[in-house]
Image (cartoon, rainbow, N blue to C red; front, side, top):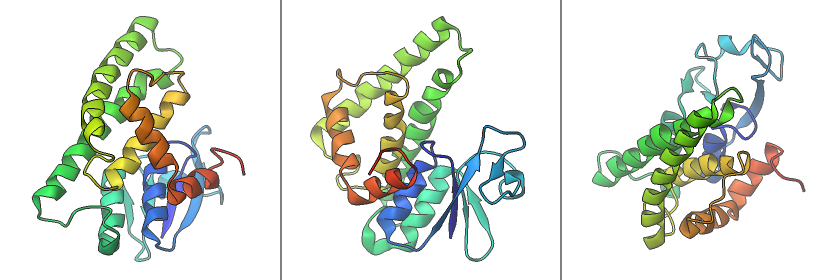
Length: 204
């Protein structure tokens, strides 16, 4: 398998899932700052993923899977003994999907206006306020449990990826100590450290 990624972006989530899985995989960086987007090997990225954004996972079969929440569940299902996702058809699997959708729509997309330097200050403030209300929800859950589903799952890797963006935008998590503890806990996992090091997100 090959993961197409951009350092520190949402593609860190499936990168963490792959590192946790123990499966063999390759990485190929995508330069999203040039048009057309190109990969490290010089391939036009649209030929890999016509949607134009990361992540994309090239399978050994030649199929390409896109959309982070689909990719992480696919990875988890390849290694059921790792318990990165509850079994398909169980209520717990739907709970995982509930969290993945919450993270995708309310946290991941919630950061969208903060990435655009042209975002008016009023809109930025509104986006932050909305994110803060979502952080309150997470604070409640993570005050009672180390992870979203009790044990570590691909949802935690995705949440870690998104919350890591607070450091890029100087958003303090001081109001949410359970989120701070969660970031420390997940960030200490060897697979997470390996993924972040591979993406150059911290030094040796």
